[in-house]
Image 1 (cartoon, one colour):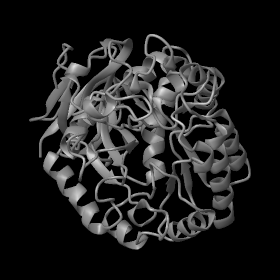
Image 2: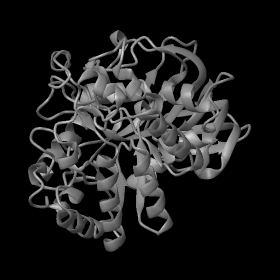
Image 3: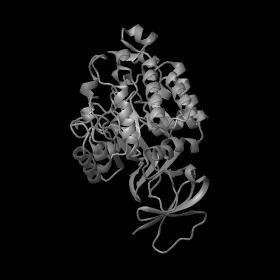
Image 4: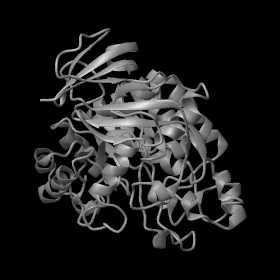
Length: 437
């Protein structure tokens, strides 16, 4: 087995209380040793980590749409994981709203086989709560768990009724699986396409109020209390939802939550010029007003929010180049997340770098109960090397994702990814840097 020594870089490992200059020895697919001034053994490849780069546990995105099977014109497992490693993610958890829906072991096995063939980022399938995501009957949760699913969700839709959600929490709790909930009171959402407010009204777009999200979140947190089940609130966008999460945590509910970069960077002001009617600012939940964006930043700062996830939602250009009402919701996110986090959170003084690693690595691993989030000796050698001060200009033409639907094209940001290592293998190196591994 080959050995590589990453020498002399700043190592940030919140799970083990490390933040300083350390050496890290990789032996095959595992971390063998971490320490200062480790001896160099014969046959070990030595990589001097340049000053300014940071070695961290591999980033984990717990909310990604890989689209395969059935929607390969948007993304495949291979292109999605290529996008992931380019974005610094060593593992992704993929949503079940494929075609067919991942509600059985056959689809789960297919996704895992495609991930093994791609051999890039680790892929953790998430199974559907209900059969066909129709909200009528529970999927076979035991079968999905055995096949390799790490959580359950009907993402794209909420779990349809309180009774079905109760039963899902009770049953999933037997297998220690979290329910990831897309919070949306559908009668209140109706046919809305943007946040209900001034900017949507000015464009004649039907609105979706923040209460649409918070009402459903409150229901599910209450049911998590009742059942002692585990609920994770996906892509939180409304300040009222964050209040519900905080209150649930105070009462002892097993509730965690995530926010996306676009919801802590952008607001519904993006609906106006120069992006008026641009479908790359159409996502679900929608971009909300300044008070909501500021609440998300506050939640990231004070620890109320557990995870940053991208909700990477690739769509073909032809699907997005239609009227705003008709276009699908969602944007890509895997290759822009790290730069947005550095630029708008770390360099802006909202969070520290160790806190960012908790949000992007430690907590996703903990919530999904998957390996990772740590650079402890014996842990998988899943490592991301970050370049906090690198200037990055987002360019859709260079993205690895099959789809290019992002509102951030052309943005210049400070901070990026130098390299990504999965199981001891170097799967991505940023060729714009003078750094080789």
